[in-house]
Image 1 (tube, protein in one colour):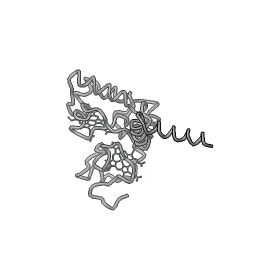
Image 2: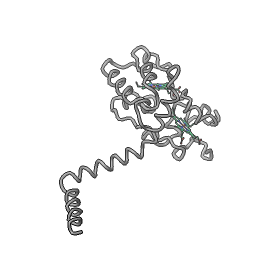
Image 3: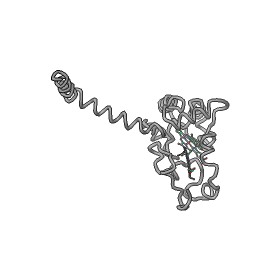
Image 4: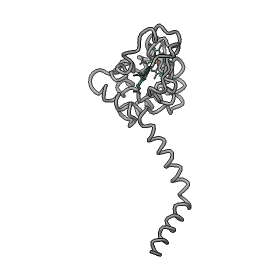
Length: 185
Ligand code: HEC
Ligand code: HEC
């Protein structure tokens, strides 16, 4: 009994010494990361955030599979990016492309990314997030007047017009609010 007690004390002493502070920190950040896994990883690359967040909100890379990013983030393709010129210099494009490919839906463990990876595993690479089956299904009952006819939304592409925490990668129903339609849910 006495020895067991000593062993517990020794273990406690070891835990509170040297490595403990680090262990505790990494435990909490692990826990926070883990609890977020049900959503989408927010953008973590500064260049991507700046260059791809100037015309619309910077879409988290986990919202599309790598094969889509490969098509979108191509020198020629960016010259006519949905009717806009979104060209980048070679080095910037390389960094953004690598970032998007490394964090694409099929590379992520976040739940929504897994679903997007699954929904796009077969067939043509979608060029829009809004074309992904899983995303379409989630929005099919929203009337057009709340999207295109809504001056504060304009298009389904402006996720953050309705998803108030989109920049944190959070899209759950509790954080949705359609501008000018406060009663819709
Ligand atoms: C010059 C403005 C501009 C820049 C810069 C820009 N985009 Fe876009 N992007 C657009 C427009 C316009 C659309 C179409 C929006 C619509 O249909 O309402 C779009 C649409 C998209 C879509 C499809 C969204 C959907 O409908 O699902 C993706 C993905 C996208 N952009 C990614 C990027 C990435 C990644 C970058 C950075 C390399 C970028 N964009 C930079 C203007 C821009
Ligand atoms: C016009 C407002 C609006 C826009 C724009 C919009 N959404 Fe949504 N979204 C909603 C609403 C409302 C719901 C909840 C639907 C419901 O209650 O069933 C939703 C649901 C979702 C869900 C499912 C949430 C859950 O808990 O299952 C995801 C994921 C999502 N949206 C992603 C996106 C992405 C990504 C974009 C941009 C490409 C986007 N949305 C653009 C209004 C919008």
